[in-house]
Each structure stands twice: as structure tokens, then as C-alpha cells.
Amino acid sequence: MIGRRRAIVAGALVVLVVEPALYYVMIINGTNGGSMGLTLVLAAIFQIFLIAPWGIVTTYICERFPTHVRASGYGIGYSVAMACVQ
Image 1: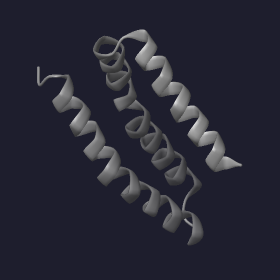
Image 2 (image 1 turned 60 degrees about the vertical axis):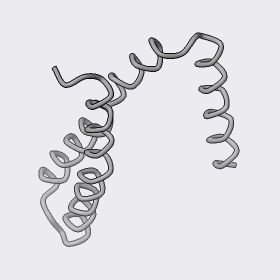
Image 3 (image 1 turned 90 degrees about the horizontal axis):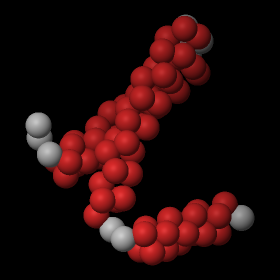
Image 4 (image 1 turned 180 degrees about the vertical axis):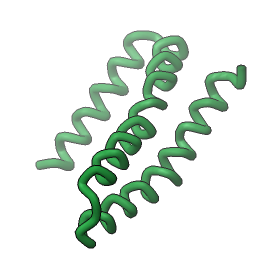
């Protein structure tokens, strides 16, 4: 109803704003002897908000770019991530 690009931007804003707040609450709850159940619920919500936008992004990338461009982008992204880890 709102379009893919707007949905991607909305998902990015949720990840940018909601995820750090949830992470902060989880850390505060865990370090102050908070409830394990609350931490688990917050972690589940964290994962849902973090992973959900990728369903739209993956579909958009597959439709927007030809295969050779997609393959090079994922390859470069993976290589850079591996270089940063080492």
C-alpha cells in the first residue's frame, strides 16, 4: 500500500531508532538483575524488528539489479565484512 521504497525507509528508521533503544533496555535489565523473561521477550522483539526489513530489501534488490551486479555487491560486502573481522 505504501510502496517498497517507503517501506524500506520506514524499516531503516525503525532499525535506526527502535533497535538501539531495545538494546539499551536489554542491557540495563540484564545488568541490574532484571527479569530473564523480560530479557527474552525484548530479545525476540529485537530480532523481529531487525530481520523483518530484509524481506523487502532482498526482493527489491533482486528486482532492481541484474544478477551480475547483485553478485558483485554481495561478494564485496561479504569480503569487507570478513576483512573487518580478522
